[in-house]
Image 1 (cartoon, helix red, strand yellow):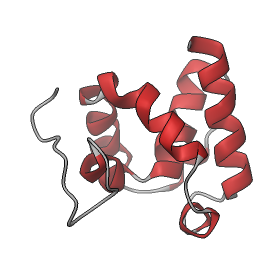
Image 2: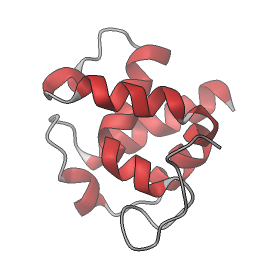
Image 3: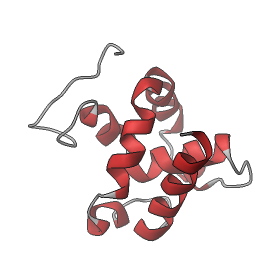
Length: 104
């Protein structure tokens, strides 16, 4: 996989590439993927100042995206609700589910 991605059980999410997903934010990752793959009008991902860095992480981790979407479907709602882009855990999971149904 890409440089900078690893299995790291000390930081981030406890699965392959979880350290990078944690840096992006699971809700941000789903929001951005949903915007570029399904609904360009969805712009919650752009509500933060660090979008450029996150887009770079997103682009470098394409091989993980399907796996991450599955993992996000089973994440704790409290953790997903701690995002700063204004979407609920239920919305994150619905968008992840829609993306998986569209592409895999």
